[in-house]
Amino acid sequence: MTRLLIAASGTGGHLFPALAVADALDGHWQVRWLGVPDRLETELVPARFKLITVNAGGLQGRGLTKLVQLIRLLAASITVRRLIRTHQIDAVFTTGGYIAAPAILGARWCGVPAVLHESNAIPGRVTRLLGRFSAAVAVGLPVAAGRIPGCRPVLTGTPVRSAFLIKQPLPDWVPAGPGPLLVVMGGSQGALGLNRMVRAVLPELLERGCRVVHLTGGNDPDVGELQHPRLVERRFSDDIPGLLQHADLAISRAGAGSLSELAVCSTPSILVPFPQAADQHQDANAACAAELGGAVIVHQHPPGHPALGNSIHRLLGARLGDADARPELLEQMHAGMDDLAERDADAQLARLLADLVR
Image (cartoon, rainbow, N blue to C red; front, side, top):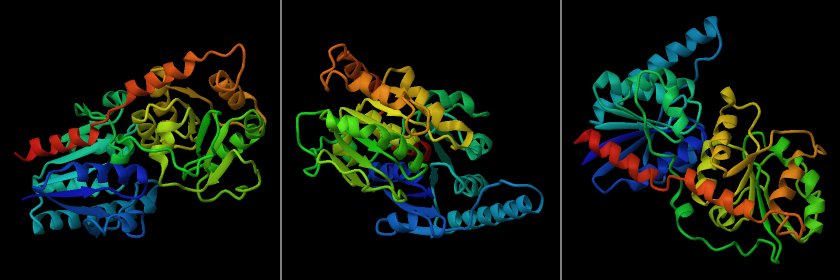
């Protein structure tokens, strides 16, 4: 039995790829999970894997604040070292974020190989600082490989849930009709700005026959204000694989997880990067899809600005009956997203781990 410690915490962008890798491992692996108290992993992980939590945080701030954080990091690293020795861990896998630092340092301390996966085009601070101490670094997007000093990353792509890789039916709650299907994913971070942009252009699109599914996220006070038989608003949905596989066009933020899901579904997309994302990494993620022709980038703007509406009409115009539209645009974007996709990222990472412990 090979014992693996997975360190993934906080958001779905860190947790879902790690869960996909765990699912791709064969029966010779035993998995324990390292997380942080009161985060999403406490809901998703315990039903499947033994969850061990430590207090870990970032290294922001100055003076006394930073000193306290360094002491906390050292304490967490000592805890991880003890955990690795107690449970005779053979390898560590982490998807970055704050929990990655004590995981990598603890593994290094014990002489155990650690694999670090970076999903964004611009690597996070922990990846840039500690990638060199990992036995292997994997990246989700090619441009990230040259941005991690002291190591030679391998391109694997970012794993997605298996449901995205299997043909799914269109959910029966989606509005019926012959018009094009537009899927909007507000996301959990910065959803309000995107949602307000979208709502400003929906009335005309709906009247012209467009069908719209708008996943708003959980904190939008305007949900329900716009009513139309061809519009469905939901805060969240478990049917995203089926929605993206059948969508004519998607509008989304450009987080690495969402981008990977759009890519494996070959969904033509308008990407609206979250303007407050660290190091503008969502802008860099979106550029990777746009350079392949799979996406159009529209920067966040006030409702009423024409940029988003113009892009939607240019891409869906043929489906909406515009005489001067270019129907080939969506086909080209479909092919571009397909080029971006890495559909076996979970298997590649599982093989990488297996090779390290042989």
